[in-house]
Structures are given as structure tokens and as C-alpha cells.
Image 1 (cartoon, helix red, strand yellow):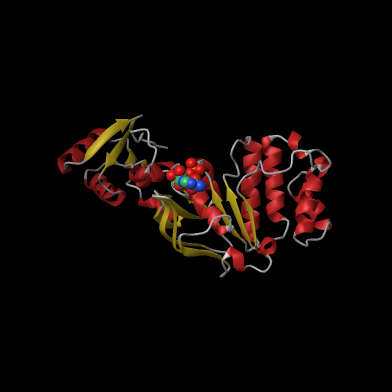
Image 2 (cartoon, rainbow, N blue to C red):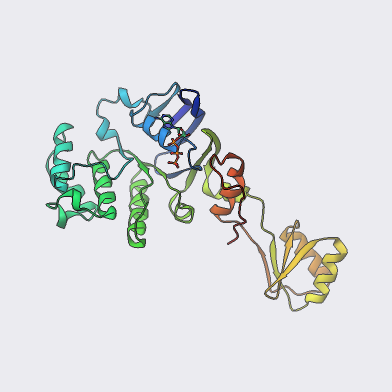
Length: 306
Ligand SMILES: Nc1ncnc2c1ncn2[C@@H]1O[C@H](COP(=O)(O)OP(=O)(O)OP(=O)(O)O)[C@@H](O)[C@H]1O
């Protein structure tokens, strides 16, 4: 488990992270979201002891990184996939880290095979594509077989096959009871990967909870209604003062829930062929709930409807 308590980081007069408290649970994939400059990387650096909090704390299984007796066996992180010695082969790179941390050599080939780099283990890491570098970064984070894993933008620049591979890996790691904490800007991908979310904006917590609850919090997009008795339905809705528009032979009714629409249709003698609340996507909810917190915004928040 990861636990941040009133975590604060100040750079000069810039508060990068402010009074941030959240938990990421074992056995779950927790997505870490926020607009550019929200403080995600700063928070993750503090988790791995690469930066010190100005105040507050963040602990991994109850201990700050510096207090961990065996850090690589407790937490693995990939914050920058391009970090490696370009002249070393993938195997040499991992052996060097394993030796430095007292991990057995055989673990190197295990993780290389696990991430699908077994056949290129002898190739210089400097010649690796972005996707191979991401896999090598993930192999590094898995070396100590840690209970907690942190990934900062792991799918950046990957092809669809690589993205699906990383998603499956994260699900498998969480299913083994590990804590998986991952940041990404790719919201449709995050929607398929994370079960829980921590959302921040301008260094502060906006949301912590399940993905489902977050998406449900966004203002609804209306209810789609199809009926062979559209004129009767239109008249009943107009009589109720309901707002609606027509789209591809269906009515999209706003500000009225599906129960009330169903009752109204029944009373008007209109048979319904479809009555479907249009739930938003993660993208829709995210745009709505973080609109205020965009540090480097483009000015307008586009309507995203899926
Ligand atoms: N070493 C530093 N010195 C000064 N300011 C910093 C430093 N590191 C980060 N910041 C500032 O702190 C804020 C948070 O930055 P951070 O990189 O953590 O955000 P982020 O959410 O990871 O953004 P992105 O999604 O763009 O990577 C930004 O305003 C950034 O300019």
C-alpha cells in the first residue's frame, strides 16, 4: 500500500504539491491523473526517495523510502524509461543493478523473459526502440519482485500492441496482490487499466476513489429514448417542460432521469424501444472535474461525448 499524508513540496515560491493525502491499495491498479504541471512526477519522485517532501510524508507499506531495509525488493519504479547506459546490453544493464542491490543473477533472465526481451538480451540498450526501452524499464522495476510498483507514463509512445501488453501486465501484477500505481495522459487507456483513481490539480487532491464513482460524478449527458410513438412522446415531454433534442431518430432528453421518462411515456401511451442514460467516459468526467485546475490550459474545454 502507498499512503501519502499531507504531502507538500515547495520549489522556491512554487508549491508543486500541497497538502496531498491519499492511499493506493494492494491488489488494485490505481491511476494517477492530473493536468500538465499538476505535480504527478514530483509526487512519484518523493515516493521513490528521489526528492524530499517539504512537509508531510509518503510511505510504502508503512515506511518512508529511506527507511526501507531492502528498497528494490519493496518497491519498483519506472519514472524515466530512457534511463540506461547506451553502451551496455540489456542483460548487462540489469546485472549491474542486480549486483548493486544484492539480487541473484538468474533473476535478470527471468525478468527479461517476463517482459519479452529474452531474445534481445545481448543487444545494446542504446539501439533499443522506445517500446523496447519501456519494456527494459519495466524489467528493471520488477527485478526485486516488489510488492509495490510505480509507473510514470508507461505507455507513452507505444504502439497498440505494446499498450495492450502493458495493460495486461498491470492487471496481472495487481491480481497477484501487488499495489500498482500508474500515471498516464491517455484517458481511454486509463479507463481500461485502472480500478481506482487519484486525481490532482495544481498540486492538490481533486478526487480519490473508484473509477466507476469518478465517471458517475460527472454531470449526465442525458437519456436517449427511441419510440415508434415519437409525436406522443414529444408532446408529453413538451407538456412537462422537459428539454430534449433529436438525434438519428431518437430523442436525447436532458435534466430528467430515465424513471421519470419511462413513467411519462407510459402515461402518454408511447411504447419505448430504448431508454438509455448516456453515461460519460473517463475523458468526459476528467474534463469536467479538472477544468478549474488546468495550469497550462488552452482556454476552452471542449465537449467530449462518447
Ligand atoms: N526541480 C524543480 N524546480 C522547480 N520547479 C519544479 C521542479 N520540478 C517540478 N517543478 C514545478 O512543479 C510543478 C509540478 O511539476 P510536475 O513535473 O510534478 O508535474 P506533472 O504533473 O508531472 O506534469 P506533467 O504531466 O507535465 O509531467 C510544475 O509547475 C513544475 O514546473
